[in-house]
Image 1: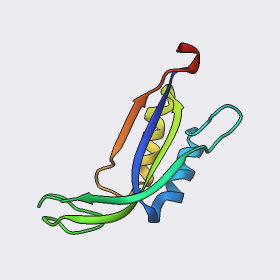
Image 2: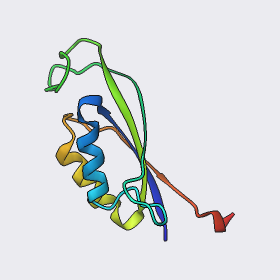
Image 3: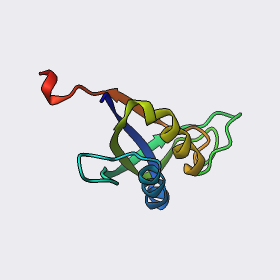
Image 4: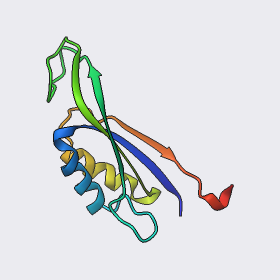
Length: 108
């Protein structure tokens, strides 16, 4: 089964809600385990332009927010549905996502 790794950045106030949504949508399954993810904290920086409607911070100013980097694997065929669920619970106007194709260990 082809898998992808998805990385999403979220304000730490919304991490648990996001993780629950990802797991319920079928993300984070590794073998006999579900709801698998890795979370690390850091500082997100951004400057919204005058057309933006930021959830946190002010337009035309550089803002810093305590965010979590959430990463998990999922079946490639489920990725679009899981991303849709992420966007439903994510508070930001623009959701920063990284999607990486993965190879199986047997392919090495």
